[in-house]
Image 1 (tube, one colour):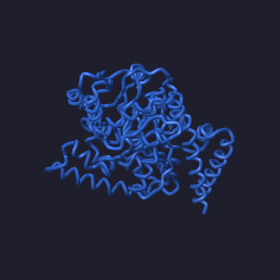
Image 2 (tube, one colour):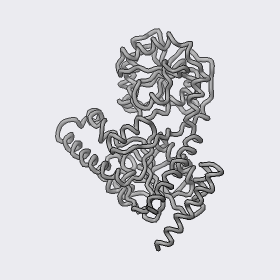
Image 3 (tube, rainbow, N blue to C red):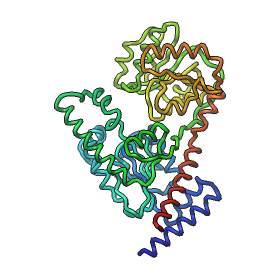
Length: 413
């Protein structure tokens, strides 16, 4: 048995070295034609958003990998991004109301992910923003975790989430705090089962180090910049687009522009806070609600600037705006600091405000208009291109190759 394992490792190592002479992306794909078995573990598959875009590109690198998820409720028209694969799900899939209330089963998710049997795989890749990295692996298996974020609601953003959910006081609040305390203990323990971490931004790499005491390689997530085209000529309005939930701070943007009645703002998006946000708007603000992609792209191409007030782990939409040649006025914290070149840069693509307050945003808009001649749409587009899916696939392939070689050397020592 040991001889078979050693032979398998040697053959796989030879494939890495041989195919790396072609290209890193091709390399990873062709390994799968050999003896390496790969498992991808994701939290839940219910829509197509940021973490799913990462998963999609990992699947493009490892198209023959088997896919695991706690639940899978994708509509038929969305299954193409997982290559119409059959997904191995957990017991939560069959629990009552799981399709709409799967998040309510958070206390069971650590147990659920531990039930996945991945013992027959050589490489396990977890795409994690909650519990996926907790999958159980053995000493002869390489576990790489691509982390969108440690659980925000269990760590540094716990108080914000509890307050927004009305769980910051009372008996339910104490039960929620106790449950999150237990999840934090589990979360730290399971970090020991990960051989190598990849983070979607330097901001998340710092969070990983803070929470787990582990270093992480930064691999920025893929943005489909090819779906957006450059438009040099801009019109006289500002744009924001977001799901209407508290942490996106759309209400802050609306209130700020309501105090600048001479400036036009277009708001795209829908969500639980839509009516509350709209009630704060002046006559200079137009709400479009939900728009299909083509409509969003059209406004994004024509806007003089995109306004972004959230603290995001990475933030895909500011990159999409820049891909249209549109500069960004952003809250200066989180991933935005890594995707937008501020005014102190030789080739700026936006500027920052450093407090999530109305006055700070108003001051930033004023600075933007004073410096409007410094923003070049072509430079904005060029900055966005560095986050392409091709770049992600190449960097992720090279990262896996490097970690596989390190792992093999450890097995031999």
